[in-house]
Image (cartoon, rainbow, N blue to C red; front, side, top):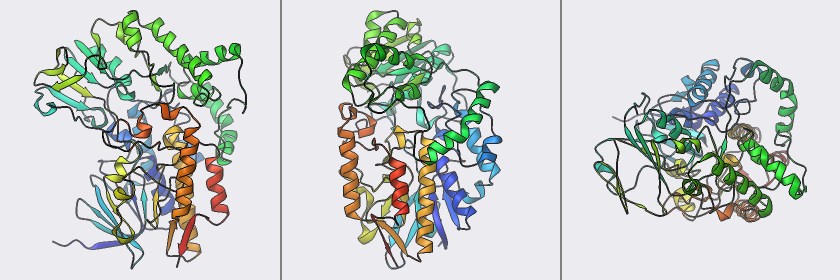
Length: 529
């Protein structure tokens, strides 16, 4: 049976916060738009990541859309750091309020997007057989949306229950009385382990690399805190719109004295989480400052963890603080004082295989009833490269990015006309408040599409020269920091065979640069009729 091709203005891939806002903006302006998502409903990463303890690591009041006062007034966060169910409920609230679900196909994967040079349009095909002929293709696929699945020998032989944190079941998992193996010590493991340990008979954490984690000191949001934020919101929004961070950052060029630095690093334990790290000047550029902050966190770990040998194993020493995304936790380190929690250091005794009854390392077998794989994500490029995206002359994106992703501004790829990526590689994305970066990109892409319309152009395409200049600039900015010293998912180090390229943009003034490019008529882009 042949399915008819539907002709529309735009396809938006993804129903997370980026896809929801992109569909809303386009539809509100009169464009015909079709959203597509493999999930059963809206929410993006928050639809899938339902593991125990899943929370945002940005304060809830900041992890919110800013584009509608009406929307802000209609929602009240309950906690300082929102849980996954509450963040998902927020996404659902947005979808309900603006009737966005009718513009999405759920439980549907986009398998290919092929540009037709003769028509200047994209042919987008789904696994359900639906085909769309679209002028614009917007990839709102998310930076952390393709979880790494276990590639450990013997994983398929395990007779117990196994779960991947990024593909967690919708129904509750019962850990009571069970022996649980947790493989990984990234954010999902750090958030989930303390809760799992409260119920499980035994928890064994398999750690390859210890991680820096800062205390959330989570608490209910008071009416006074919400009122204070709402009072300051106009200034916050004005700062964001002008391209400023919206936070009272330290003065540029300030080099703190030893006494000032000792006081500064104390704030890492004040519950500000990632925000408190940003408040330390040049944390990811100045080795002296970073060493002081890292030493402070390691001293806190030694204070909390009673066994000094275990505390040493949990203390990161192979990379500077914040060069891997720091975690924000509740009782992670304290949970190692429990009698039912054990750490296995894989640097000393690596995993050899998963067996039918548990995990085998080079020196012991660890029986388990449940294995939790907290292996992270194929970050920033995984979702895009899972789709067969082809443009001029059948050029495949996976071939263009064989040696690492290349974009112009993180929103466009040379050779791929009328294709836009929301928070793509080469933009601040995962080093920023994602909600702010999503809004900035969606607004910029929307304006670019309007520009194509008003100039009566057929296509808009990043030039190769502009892309090469931008990639060089992104690399130069990264090389001026301590980031390259960490084997992080920022460089794809967690995925075997993935090219080692620093993917986010760490420079300053990103939004101002993007806004200026738009104001100047989009230099670096070619428009053709």
